[in-house]
Length: 103
Image (cartoon, rainbow, N blue to C red; front, side):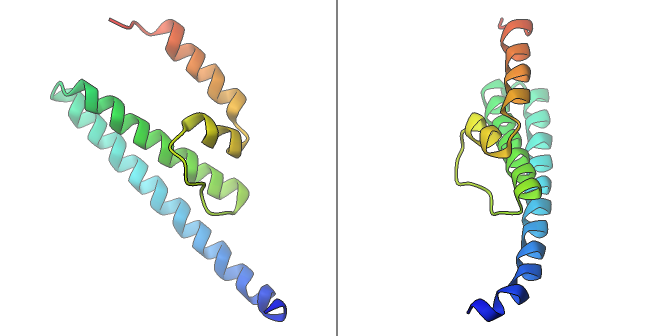
């Protein structure tokens, strides 16, 4: 198996490119769905679909940076840590928490 490993690397890289593109497309779809739900006043589901969109784009970023399959997690902070952008994630979370009106 070891002598065939160099032959598998390009195939794995192509697979990660495809995974990244699919995750980006799914994230765009989820964001479009969130916008449609917002327009119809379905606010609870706007939050859910927004979370899905962010989760998928974080996974796509992980795949593009690490060239590995995305982790199986729904935790945005965990995905941000694994991707190496947790500090940026915290800054955005701080902004959302303190500057956006809650009511």
